[in-house]
Image (cartoon, rainbow, N blue to C red):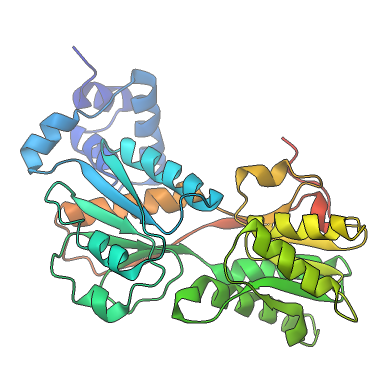
Length: 341
């Protein structure tokens, strides 16, 4: 016979209901109790039986996750974190790539037209608020990312303004007087870019450094080639920057390449920092200073919020939930290499 809830409860010294609450991700459990129960679950090898729960609840046990671009390392790593978080709750995740197509984003927000989807995690790029508000099928939905919607839907994200401010402040504190930014974009679909520009500008203001629009580079996308081209433009300025904050790690890697092509050393001649802390960032030469969003926490918050809605918790008002982030200082900024593992 497999390990039962009762076995876990006895091992952890709590009630069966408490174990059930932890397994379901309920928030009304103290952290100390949650950790004790999770330790017992791990030690005993307990796994909730999905078929039993799905028969009892009438649910399929399938969630959909939709992101704009699975080729982008950030979204690939986020998808892996969501799959792990859902698996811990005995759910399977169906992955969809939208390409930023608003019609595709709306189709997924409506549950892909399938009754087999219990709920949707959606990272929208171009979906119009009015279209999302008028969706015909009201399947449980949680939004991911920085696109701002004034809708009664749970939303999980990180504080991009604070994160951009922190990395820019780091570059300024190292003595770099001319700090550029690569990654600005226009339009409502560019909420991430807008927020990171704002954080960048706030850091300059707090340091008493005048904002120079010539040092803010727009890009059509957040790809390696876009980082190369933007950095080339910056290096052709009459007064090139001493440091560059790139709005993702792919842009930063492209900027490193463009600097090397000009015979410049990073960070001795120009410091570079990125955003996302994707896996390759620690293996670049030099290793990349970057902002590390807590993707594990983001995934856990998103899955827990979605499952609360699936379980019928309609009384709780929609929430905006923030996952943490931290600045990882490595070689590319000229600071100490804090993450060489």
